[in-house]
Image (cartoon, rainbow, N blue to C red; front, side, top):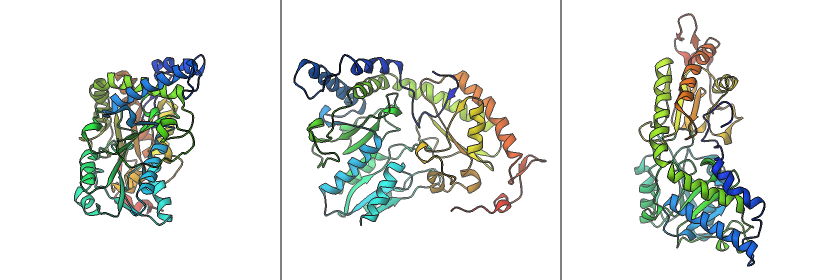
Amino acid sequence: MSEGIYLDNNATTMVSPEVVQAMLPYFTEQFGNPSSIHQFGNKVGLAIKAARKQVQKLLGAEHDSEIVFTSCGTESDSTAILSALKAQPERKEIITTVVEHPAILTLCENLEKDGYTVHYLKVDGKGRLDLDEYAKLLTDNVAIVSAMWANNESGTYFPVVEMAEMANAAGIMFHTDAVQAVGKIPMSLKDTKIDMLSVSGHKLHAPKGIGVLYLRRGTRFRPLLRGGHQERGRRAGTENAASIVALGKAAEMAMEHMEHENICVRAMRDRLKEGLLAAIPNCFVTGDPDNCLPNTLNIAFEYIEGEAILLMLNKQGIAASSGSACTSGSLEPSHVMRAMGIPYTAAHGTIRFSLSRYNNMPEIEKVIAAVPPIIAQLRKLSPYWDAANNVPVEEPEKAFAPAYA
């Protein structure tokens, strides 16, 4: 691990040293094209086949042929949704949620411009869906439902297995963006009605630039990329062999560390939560802490700016995030926090701490010691905070008259 304390693993993860070692030969001596029939290509083809089985095992898929390698989670998401629309041109509606990753929301916004109708399921204050509202939208006009398995900011799970069963009963395809959940919780896709699922390698200690689309056997499908016959004609383009081998190794290691992830990483996350909530007034956990990823903690520190917190944490060598890495740079509060109805004066101060198996408890104790002075220092500058009495000003929402753009 490099210097500093890295708690931004939902943005990306360190590539495991064992994964690097597994992929290195495929940059040098194992350089053949896996589609070639000679020995150079054949060795690489066998390595890709082995990686496919490693990913199959992690996902609990019935067949290794259901694993389609892509370049990233975003490509997998786009492939799934666009395929469903092309395969069923008579269906012009999509169901998704208001808290999806931009990889889904931006695509859906563009599809609306092309004449498709997108239904955005709302969430409650803990980021939970209303399945009665969902059931009412399941009609013959819907081509696909796309709902994330776990939210990248709050970590809250959606009941995707139940939602897939409901969609299947209505004759509708179901896709889930599972890039945050894969490798952290056990999965057995063969026992579900999920038709398509997206994986991103760099979320589970493989490199960036490799992903997977799980495609249930028998699902109607149209490729996004056409050309060669790679991936059984479902994703054209010469395979990224080194990264595929790396993802296979990362999947194998994720299986081996699943218990550690759910016991030790969860214990560190819980210790961080207890330590910060005990030491800092006017802060709270967002999302549904009883039903969320074991590595994710999102805390709203009221009356201050998250970006300022991050900068001061960074000066002490601590890396965290104020939301999705793919929406950083925006001055508006996270769309996830807004969807949950988090007040403006709290949504601006949310910080996501996302841990991995490479963290340890001494690091967590250092963070617990570092954060309270930072919050106290920033609140002295806040128009919402009475520094003399160390409490919020009366009616803080009126102190600065903020409004969403």
